[in-house]
Image 1: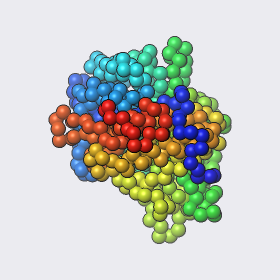
Image 2: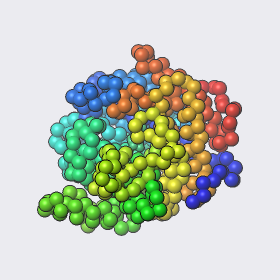
Image 3: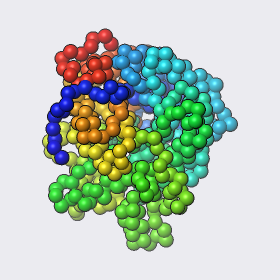
Amino acid sequence: FIVGTVVGGRDFPPDFKFGAATAAYQVEGAWNVSDKSPSIWDSYIRRYPERIIDGSSGDVACDSYNQWRKDVEIASNLGLHFYRFSIAWTRLMPSGFPNTVSEDGKKFYNDLIDALLEKGIEPVVTLYHWDLPQSLQDLGGWTNPLVSDWFADYARIAFSLFGDRVKTWITLNEPIIFCEIVYNTAMHAPGILSAGVGNYLCNKHAMLAHAKAWRIYDEEFRPKYNGKVSLSNQILWLEPENENDVEITETSRQLMVGMFSHPIFSKEGGWPPVIEKIIAEKSKKEGLSKSRLPPFTQEEIDFVKGTYDFFALNYYTSRTVKKAKEGDRIGPWPMNGASDLDIHLTVRPEWKHAATSWFYIYPEGLRRQLAWLKEHYGDIEILITENGYASYDISEDDPDRVQYYKEHLEQVLLAIEDGVKVSGYTAWTMIDNFEWSDGYRSKFGLYKIDFEDPLRKRSPRASAHYYSSVVKSHSLDVDNKFTDEL
Ligand code: PNW
């Protein structure tokens, strides 16, 4: 692999699209208006306020439930081709089941979608960005096999209400986070610890939930609406710490990427065989009668396999891998090492730390990850559905974020030169918002939000000017000539 600079001009291909993203719980607020029911995040922040670093919540967040017109205006000023947002299941279907569809919920998302389209901005909609109805959590949530049917019913309602105008759908955002982080650390809703068991039940049911939704779209909606459906996978690029860590690194990638992609994107389908074998052997040694990793039946393998129209990648950071030794500090997978592989994850000393514990900057990791995906899953379209930079600094002057975007977009151009079919790029995030267990401490926004202001004033950062210039010129040749029209 040559770490190079872009040789063939710095323009993006003509059909390359730029967007920015948010998620319902992180921006909407209005947690209990109208008939909306509580999601697991509404319950979690009430039950465990100490698990949010600043004791805050998404009760009001950016008040986007009321201020959404401003968000649309921002998206338009930035020149975005698309805006990725998520639907709150509990706002659209308060009981969690399709017997209740909220009129207010329907109106909220209809208005948002229509306003975007009026400005020529394509809505890209995520169905599940971590806010499961609490009523379904009470029945076991993602560990109950029925969750895939509950999700499929929700997806069908969303496709039928909005599918005439929404052509790009993300079923699930980052199952690695809502399965692995949740059950390995309990530091995300619903706050249940079940390492090595709950995470794998969730993983299997997430794969089936996605596949059911994709098949519903494929059979009932694609013929009339002709859209695309996938799921977003969060991947930390992994590379060997030393030459003798190559094999363990490839195995680790199967745990990081394969567990959420092999069932869907590989030719064989099902769990990555190397991981399935390791967990089965470990479970046996532990005296269990069955593997902690629930198997797929052949029927399920065939059902899940091929349920994609493109690959959606969220990339932020990277790690190096080596076999763990006695005394290695091991933190939760996937940020550090503790998992069914006895590995230790760390970073190279030259990777600069950004805000929030897990964030180290390695732009080349994005290009390498894209190449790996092409190599393993074929020449498929890849849409980058998230990439962005965390700071503790709230100011509008954010040269580090500008640099992060520039360096990562350079890697995207290089990946395109490598022959990877990257079709678009999404900045995380358009506006500062509730950053889960980090509360409002870490900032990812192109726009700053004043969280002291009841109207949540939005102001563009330098990075907004930079990104907007890139989008409008469709090129990285924008140094020092940012637009000033925001
Ligand atoms: C994503 N990591 O989470 C989520 O999709 C967003 O909701 C979130 O606000 C954003 O990225 C920033 O955190 C991530 O460990 C969680 O590399 C963990 C990681 C990356 C992203």
